[in-house]
Amino acid sequence: MSTLHRQAGTCEIITTMARLKEVADILANQTEIAVDLEMDSLHHYREKVCLVQVSTRRQSWLIDPLALPTLEPLSSPLADPKILIVMHGADYDIRSLHRDFDIEVTNLFDTMIAARFLNIAEFGLAALLNGRFGIELDKKYQKADWSKRPISREMCAYATADTSDLLPLYDQLREELINKDRLPWLVEEGNLVCQARVTEKDGPLFLYCKGANKLRGHSLAILEELLQMRDSQSELLDRPPFKVLSADTLIEVAETQPRSLHDLSLVRGMTPGQLQRHGTGILSAIERGIATPENNLPRFPRNGKKEVLERVKERLKNLKSWREKYSHNIGLEPGLLAPNWLLEAIADTETAEKVELDAIPGMRDWQKRLFSEDMARVLAMV
Image 1 (tube, one colour):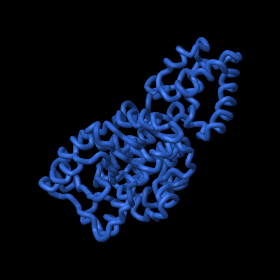
Image 2 (cartoon, rainbow, N blue to C red):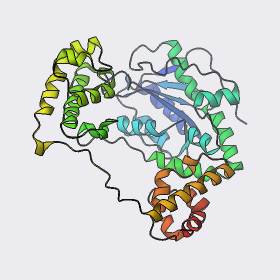
Image 3 (cartoon, rainbow, N blue to C red):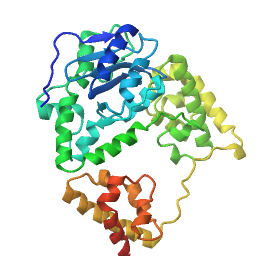
Image 4 (cartoon, rainbow, N blue to C red):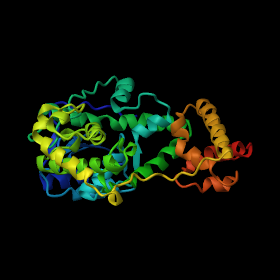
């Protein structure tokens, strides 16, 4: 039985390669390591990993990548398949470790995914630690700028708390998954998360702007010009784009197409400071968008989804009805059991053969074992 460890005083911050190698050697002799990251995405144009927290069952360290030339010594223990890496909500941290340091994780236990597989309604780390151990996590520094130095004692304590009791939480969740025969589900999902990578944006910026799909013609051309202008300003100011101008504001500008600073000041969300700093640039972007020739106007890609046949509609209706009952019976969130994209793919199969369902891209092995035969029976009803 593992025990919680509440560490007194300040946690050691690793700022030299010699000490990092020593800590890496300690980690290499563990069977489980708890890991978390802190980044600065809310404060800078290009986000980066600013802190790596690691804990064993006895010790915790804060590793400062901004003070180190490389984190290469961590590569071996984190990628060792014999060492379990315990993280909470690991997807983006896995991507960031690979992006910034070319570090891979190969053996992952994600406590957030585990909690969801156990049908725990509040699966945030703070809620889990509070509910199980009575530990109160202070989330005061959740949105702090972790690139600033020195790191205060309070921020050190905050960062350490994210991993110092993660292994005892893992012990409990693992045991409960075993009792429900769901540990293989967690292992499969962990293997998939380990393969997650950051992908660079490709194509026009409006493809990544929420709400852009409702625009057409010159409005969409204006939006693209506005997004390009905002991106340039964000890089120049070293600020996240959403802190320069919100997407909602830009979409309203693209829709209303104001032609003067006065008209621009009437746009919802446009502050006097934004108007002063970016007003002229915004009007210029509008002019460029309006001047775009008809044959060069951008188009938001449509998914080209074929008209859903009545038979497919009926199948999907039956599948959703089945999912509602089945998820209730086994105590699992419907969207986690079988997300809509999977039900749509199943409904669109040519036959009701189990072998065809098992070949659907993205369908998990645990889902195939759990309900593909049921799915085949539901499809055969139509």
